[in-house]
Length: 501
Image (tube, rainbow, N blue to C red; front, side, top):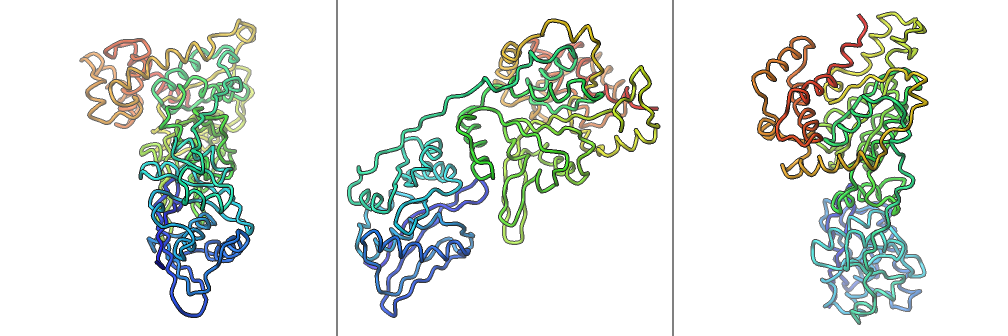
């Protein structure tokens, strides 16, 4: 038979759409053509495949070979289809059997010698292949990554000949057993290092328990960055599904996936010179930005007003939706972006506004312009806004407070309560919020007073209710009490009370 169909996977964001590699051999002058929207690296695969077949001892058919990569409207990039194309040619020319092909998917680049080489994004291909009930054959260097997404359904072929033997004798290549990397916790910063700042430490615990966003404001050197870097140590480790999502984003980035960080929450801290594309992602071939690399983890923006206004505005929709859409003329790519935002800023351009020594000489207009670099809609989406004053010398010499492990136990317990209700408090829908954040008459009057005094928006009111629910969860209470609501209002309105006149 002169027609063979073999399966592979494309790379589209963190998705791995199925690609059918159809190979047809016809009579006529010897030629090889690849159709189906191949890009340059895919068109060049015909030269790599020809050399790989000849150097592996196979016959390259002296016929007219047509290779179709379907679906045609899906862009094809890279050398990930080399192994599938080579095996398709061998199957169409009768040099390997056709019958086993529907049970496998092939993703690997070929060297001229026939050896296989790793490609980017195999984890997504392994997840998709496992879901389709087929086994994935890839290069050995991709085996550990692929085994995370395809337990007991991944085989590694170091050479084209190994893949051919697998088609002749199905038990030739052993399955790659999934070995989850051990989690290293020694390099995670501990909350014990933070001295003083009890209110900010408490706010950090609340933020961790309910996945709330947070803004820290204070003079230089008061521990804003130190405190923010301790947040990942308070969060529970990722579930298997969450870890796969985070790893699927990491493997297609420039840094790649670090197996030793398996199930650890990502912590991304881009410099304030980062552009909007660096934060949101983009490029001619869309790649994830910082907000996607922080998926299921923490995005820390230090010196918040120093970021470009356009860069900060790209955060608004992902904070609400949990994903970002990169649009190009030919297609759209959706990346997950369910991150927890923690930002830090000084209270004024010089950083010393409100200091008792009178070190600040900024005018009210300068302070106002500095703070207006952050738009109101973005500030309205930040749940906790905390002031961090300078710490007295006596507090710096005080014994250390609770460590991350102790606080994390309370955070995990609070999150278990939220899981029983179906969602983390920061992600409650309006119906869920009205069900779980009910207030009595006195509490509604207290909230109304705060709304009228500070000019709070309906979104701000909803976020106050969600934070108060988190505080109640930390206390193990079924209902939101007065002190829980008061504390939540304090976090929301603290920065407003410190604003210059």
